[in-house]
Amino acid sequence: MSDIDYIIVGRDVGEAQYHLVGGSFLEADTDPGGTPLDVIHIGKLIARMSEREGVERCATEHEIEQIKRAMRVDSVPPGQFSKAQEEAIWAQTEVEVLFETRTPGATQASDDNKRILVVPADGTLKAALDALEMPAPGDYFDPPLTYPVDKNLMLGHLLDQIVEIAVEAPEPSNLATMSWTDIKKHFADRFEARLSDAAHQGDVDQVGAYHRAVGIYATNMCR
Image (cartoon, rainbow, N blue to C red; front, side, top):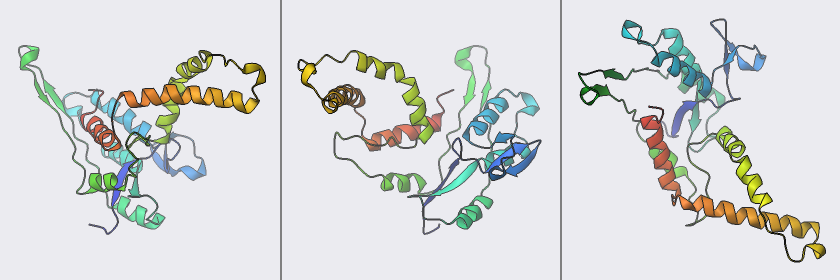
């Protein structure tokens, strides 16, 4: 095993290295158009393949190559590899696509279901967990195993609730004498109180959040 711990993950939106154009793989930095090979494309391929039946229920070599080119190598913690090192590890990576099955029985209770849980390579989950900067009890932390785009999507999803917090903020008794700085602090305190309460309702610490994310990804909630 390498002296540097690393993981191999899907490329986030906006981080594609290759685009699929007419069946060919072109470098993203040439702005070739086509389809960026990232986590969205991996999900699209899996959704498409899940509809196949019988002998067609398999992945083609070209689809497997698309998935591989939609993945990247990250050191744990990040920034320890040169581009050449990342490319060398990526080139030696093999992608295998397995299909889960459901064989109907006489009744649903007798259906034969096969579910595949993928256990990562040795040490990679522990290495990522060890690299987490543990906050003090009760403090906030960056949710593990999330992409930056997840935060942007959640902010958009919560926009109405955020606006509601602002609209429902009580009028200060000394509004007439408040400065703009005082007013901004009034709203900031209001947001902090409401969002802090919401953040702690789940009562999940950073390690628990990490294990939760691993469990979600391993069992694929869409099933």
